[in-house]
Length: 450
Ligand code: GCO
Image (cartoon, rainbow, N blue to C red; front, top):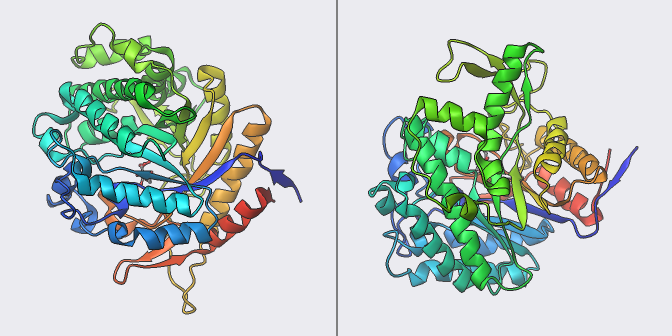
């Protein structure tokens, strides 16, 4: 039996996002978000599910904080719904929206839980979408104003900030694949959205440096994956390099090096018209961050496929790995490879795993428990690899399991359960799964056995 002890200051947490858990979509003065709008269009979301009620966390946050306390979480990553603060995207902030997050933060601090706030987890005010959304450069300035308002309101108590969650998904799932709000399908739109998201990140970091309390920290969360070619052929190696460019380098290079990668810039400029990159943009985007947030779920395995649009490569499965309910292959060693790669190529001062977890089709036993052994095993095996990366010098300071609660899984609606806590959507009852109880005990010992 091996004993994997984590650093003393290591932070154990769980993550959620406003749109996925809050509900109360039309209460407390909240404005419409692009997900409120997108989810009501038939065909966009499984079962026609909307975020209207979700986990009703808006009304049950005290109970949820109590649950976190019982699970001994050291930190909680949540997101702020921009349309709660600026129902119309700009103008005067909505006091009731700020009050909600003020009360949540106070409840967390009373329970001894460190709050980590994400400013943008995909719920753009619809009013800004009506003006072009992230394709419009002006949205970046609106984001900087919104961020400054929230820093001002919560910055005396929130010490950990994330500007954006997964700008790759916001831009490409939302504007190229059309699977997420606002449902666009154009490479040009996706590239414009990506640039303005990155620009808004840099602007928010600069706004934070002007007001941020000393000791508080800001970063960005990227969804990154190790990319493996499916064979040792030169074509597959090229395919893997391109996908790595699209998924990882297009976002990490600007943030850490202040430039887009040359090979991708060439490829994208040949295929679509790039948004205007103003003088000074790249310096703003490259403003130093205090940490990198990494969301890791599964590896990318890529092969060359001349027929695949638009760049002649396709993602494939390795085939010999178990898969989750999302169809994602489970490969914990990928987390180790990814950590080493990030350390070598970008050398961030600090890393938080801001999401890692798995969906499985959980069921309640007659005794009222949820025996999610597969999820428990998924988390445990990823933590073993994370421990290995820390031993090898990667500065990982915390881990947040996705997710605290079963919740609204975007285009999959309520059909996919990622929680360590089961949510009965009819009664809104929360039932900690076996993985949650295991996580609680692991946190208490700050170590794994395995
Ligand atoms: C993401 C988001 C989460 C998802 C989770 C599971 O990574 O897509 O940050 O909101 O729910 O990742 O897909």
